[in-house]
Length: 216
Image (cartoon, rainbow, N blue to C red):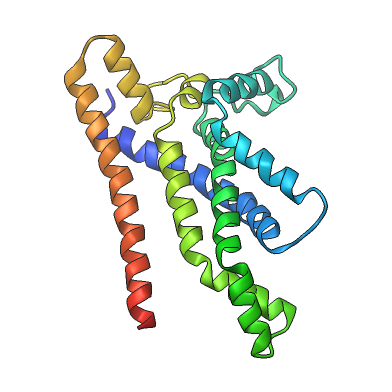
């Protein structure tokens, strides 16, 4: 029988990997939408904003069909593995990453860029200055994305199947214990999940405050 610690560490590892993956492709997209003006930009922003409300079970079903043995990606044998859950979660949280990064850049883009150009900076240097000032938004994007990923159930259940010692995570174990009427461990696991999300948020807030103090 698995211990609560093993399930907790697996949950953190899977959702942490998902957050890293979404940051790898979501951050460049957010920077592009925040800094560049091009045709179709508002349509792309609208698409990512709309995908913020994407139902997890719908995405889980689509990925299940893709990764199942009869699906086009079945040869990869990813279904019912931690990596499958990470990939599914990363796709789910990508709109959060993109939207938060884009909004953080847009909120300071014109002011900082104009100031940088006034001081003689080139277009590239001005853009780098904007990115430097927007790092708080990046931290917020990572925090929100990780919190969404680790609290997700539909994808973890459909792509992981709650396999003992392999794909069981906090949310799927909470669902299992609730279904069996064992509410005490379900509540305990819920508290652990809440503590993880709170710890991540507090850590990011601390880093942001320390950065603010360093500027004073």
